[in-house]
Length: 594
Image (cartoon, rainbow, N blue to C red; front, side, top):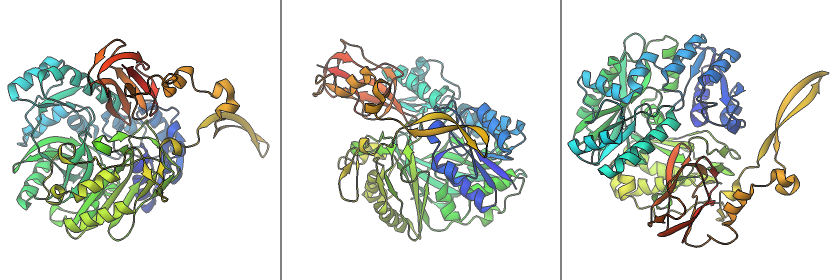
């Protein structure tokens, strides 16, 4: 077993791994960017080291920086968590070169399965059919059009080296191919470091069902049961459950055996998930995630297994502790991802900010995995997952009612969350009947009653994001003496107020003008404002352009997701106040339309 494990990640998953390591007597090492210097996972670990920088590319995606810390800390194991470099064969090889063990699959297996086009060919080679599509990377929008014309519309463009719905765009007609491919490649490059995409048919109202597998280095592979992940927004999961509703034992067995075939075909070792689309009693291979999934707790709850512990044991050379016949599933589990998002009217807009109050639920059959505590800030630079609430019940309806009770106990102030959307899902007759599908949330769920932009405090007073922003801190390098020895120390101290700071502490003239709306002009119905904090990826109009109601004006990237900022009136763009690469705050004026 390992002596010291470095967790090459942040947030909830870093906390999750650190906790299991503690139970096993393994020392832990956290890493952190400038944004995360006071984060919960940093406070929880035995040691913590800085990854100097603010962007993911400079920190959590920097193989060189992470491996330097592996050597410096003396860690003999590296757990990648999920996202970032968790499916990077190059990172796994680099970790091995440090002398430490990568706690995950082999680089060879990752190379097969992280390339979605290659993984499709691998699955088809062992008799597991994939969704009809191309198994080569796209080079032009004309290829998308040709595929759509030959196979029917709509089609899905997907990132070849990623998952989680990022880098995925649905194309309904030929005219949408070029902008969709450009947008998908941009988002894939930002999220995964590679922009290649492929195309496949977009199935009408399927369910997303995935199978958890475990494999050791001695040739033993088992499946631990399925998870239904069909409640999604923007092709990203909101709620997962196990076992899948309205799913027969025969279907479960067939899918489990198919998942094992796929894993064995690439020589897979450690924990992994094989994802399928389920439609009319048939399933198609979608992809394999060569890492621990966000939703792994629902499998843990129904099987009684600690998947992180099993990952550690497999990586240290131990055999699987159970056979397929010994896998035992009991009851029903549901997981809700509590994200910092404004879900009113189904918008699901990322809403970074400081969490002024956080009370998570408890009681029988309730588990919460969180990466934040009160006072922590949800950064716009990373994923917006605040916590995962997981419940167990003797049957699905018991679990559903328990989840409603648990979510009603949650108190989150400072940022709006997806909790109101989860409650709407759990109470909807379609969900109760298990009659939902991957686009059901966006097509059928009415979220018009969800309050916009705030949670309510205990006194019932609306708390906006601006009211709860954490105190801004700045870096100061100072010299100190301890027992007569001189040290250079980096401190993070409160930033002086704008009144005290003078010109150096004030916002730029352009930012002030943008926030004011130009001294009164542009404050009417023709003002287009940023609905959230984010970075301008692309400006889609110019001054003098005529725009229609609902036409995209620019594209904002926040928390690894791209969102269009649309015109709320038709007219002519008279002022354009942003340019690509600029960072906006919620409420900043993007453009004025007359």
